[in-house]
Image (tube, rainbow, N blue to C red; front, side, top):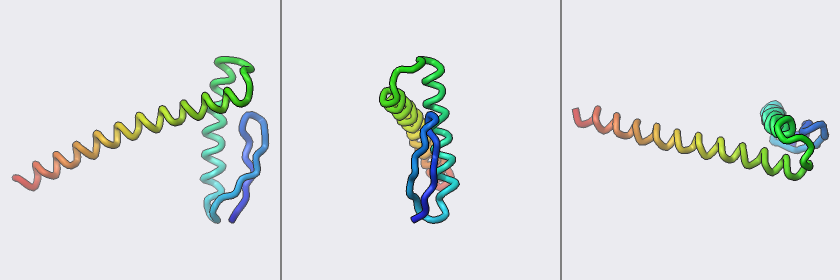
Length: 87
């Protein structure tokens, strides 16, 4: 296992990841940190735990919307394939 140190809201966290995944983990942490920073700028100092929970919910909301879009696109692809195969 590889280890990296990431920074979220100015705090350092040492994390383990699979070998070769270090840059990916750093990128994910940087992206999450942007969510936390955005919330902090919007709401001020409302507590680390609350900021983290709110940022996590924002990420999950974005994921949910993207999953809906993917599901719609998969359905569209199936329809197009069926139309092609029936032609």
